Length: 257
Image (cartoon, rainbow, N blue to C red; front, side, top):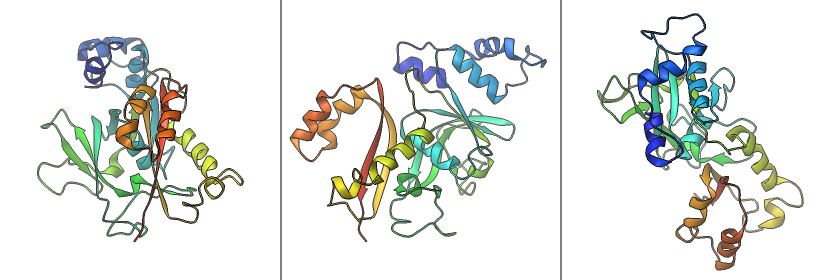
């Protein structure tokens, strides 16, 4: 599913069939049987992606226990399909469902839970996420993977806590990962003399919400007018600014009760 998505969207990537994926992982079988395949480990899947010109990153819940769901949301918000590893199973996640009225401006509670990002100085749009949209090859497409498990017969039987790892098939030329860029953005917004208070008195002291996502520079510039930059000069500055192929974008929103 991952290879089909990228092969349809980018000429750089070609579609690969299941047998070819197993064959690519043959040199990394680790002593296990290759044909017929009994399945692949997440590191083998990541290596297969690497062999097909991706720069995969693997995130485990044990490695990022407090921000795991937030990072997962951030990459999906970037339009990247992800591989989720569940107990004895793998699915592809590519969307989410958010409820923007359920939490704000209150902190997460048992009734309206939301991922709390530790050490953050701002709230993020992941706070409103309620479910991920997945494709599970054992069921019909477009299943909803809820935070607390299935609410309907058509929902996934799994829940968020059962997601053990996820693999991000980052394209080449993405040099910063989500957990690296987030503290850098927060530093830009808060550092004394150059932060929000100094640069934008209008936003100083306000409750702010950040939306973080990865985009191509071409896509970002193409949507500048649609996005609305507040002033034509700002739009022109961004349009003429030299940028790398991929850029991280942080949108700032002000909320009031």
